[in-house]
Length: 158
Image (cartoon, rainbow, N blue to C red; front, side):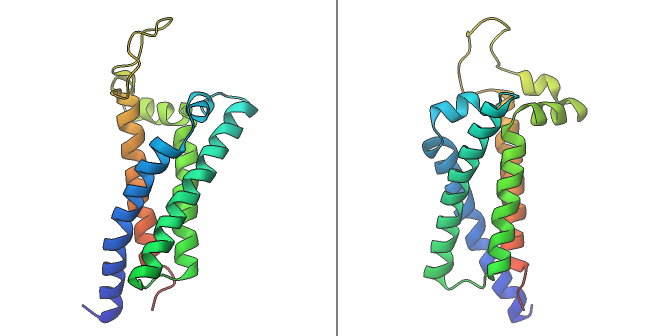
């Protein structure tokens, strides 16, 4: 393994868990209840709330990756840093509009899993995080955080 590849591997190994931690904090602590409850609406209120959530989410992920970059002296280029953040932000916004992820679940044959644990229509009888929609949402985010970490580590490097 050449030293350039080793630098990328070390960078990836540091950035991925950093993004996963930042993701959990930003998605569950920084996002407001109002944003969480309105970002799915199919109008300007929904788009605006999703945008605000993704803006604060990206601020947290960027801060954490920048901190790790600086403290550990990682081999990250500005282009790799920005590209990783953009991929994370765009894919996060896409999934958090909810109807987009629901459509993907339906197309992929996972509509039943997506609805698992959801309240019955007209009822609020299962308000919990333990739903298929939440599990698919989080696994979607983790997939793209993996891609973002990989791009951060390898784009623009030697």
